[in-house]
Image (cartoon, rainbow, N blue to C red; front, side):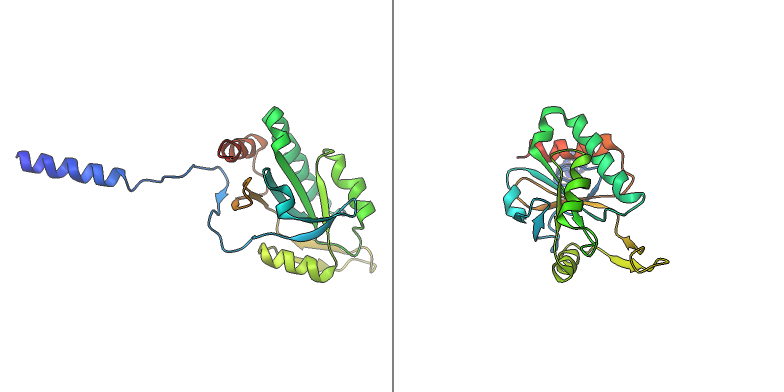
Length: 194
């Protein structure tokens, strides 16, 4: 009988070590992904930017376009609300908006659009080839949908936000429609591990 209790206790102790060891996020944990390793694009002030420029900060990366009627402005507004919930820690988060419409989204247009959600937000752009390369690196889908005139097209595109930790590692994919509180909670976990 004692042997059975000993074996049961040993088995319980062994299984306790098999539990999840990392943090539990609200968003999709993509830690260890073999994609999303960075970018080289131009910001809305004309400066060349890479992921390394933001080391030491948690970086959120959303792909969209300024003519987007709903998903893009909603995502940026939600991120602003999440940063407000972070209070002073928001200064340790960098929100980046990558346009998938470089034909229309000039640096000037990005400068007038992205910082309106928050002055710290940065718009990034590239030519068509570099935009496609960065989108491929992050597994982002985007495709032009013709409009009634050549300039009135829209774009179908992936709607989530990627998050890199302060060391530049890809950690999370935030689904479109996630609440500001849940986003803020996930960002707090990453900030605490900085």
